[in-house]
Length: 309
Image 1 (tube, rainbow, N blue to C red):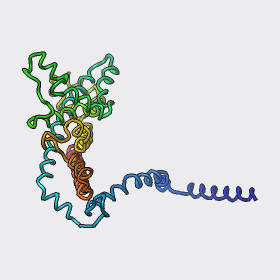
Image 2 (image 1 turned 180 degrees about the horizontal axis):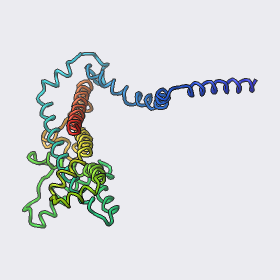
Image 3 (image 1 turned 30 degrees about the vertical axis):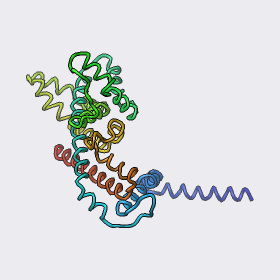
Image 4 (image 1 turned 60 degrees about the vertical axis):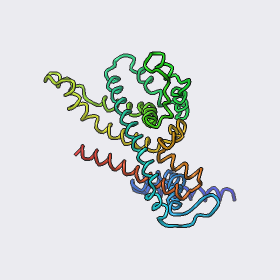
């Protein structure tokens, strides 16, 4: 009886393996990736689909979802607060990613010229990326503290400031401070991509341009910049999307304050979902945020294709 069972199981597996062997290369590839597709469907597609469904509903934790159509989206688009926080998010991204890209480019160019202790210098420049975001944010909160922060103590002791500055509680420049903190955390990521692009530039081109009498600026413009375009586009696209959805830095340092000066899309979603319990409204905000992210990807993709053509 046992032998018959083992034989039947063996026949089943042999038949299965024969069918797999007879599959075409494309179908065999689909078979190999199917477990990953199923897993992603369970942990990504289904939750995202449920959020999209909730965005068309009136829903909080005390009631069942009630379909209301486009009511949430209409309320958002007629709410001036949404546009204010979207503007804040745009400012945060532009300042943070702009300064991060400039800093990363300078560091990458410097590291590309270093011939000794390259591993040490690269490791040193990567350490901000290795710190957990919340830990890094708490560190900056201590550094920027207006009463006993290290930054104020250094600047006052050096005579640069007469009195301590409230870096995190001034509506006039707190947004810029948050953006620069974000830039500090993302510089290593952009720097690694740009450095990889720099190392792909053939040395022969620099040697030939030097013989032709090209200046440093001309070499950067016509050689370095041209080879760096793909790395620039990819790093800027990824960094922009991550900056647009950054929550930990804003929430930990200011919580959206002072007033509403640093409230952004992500903090707005948090407020609606977890404090006001308007989960349908928050879901609609999340869907709009995803659409904007897709727009960012489409923008950078279009620019990249235009440049390559």
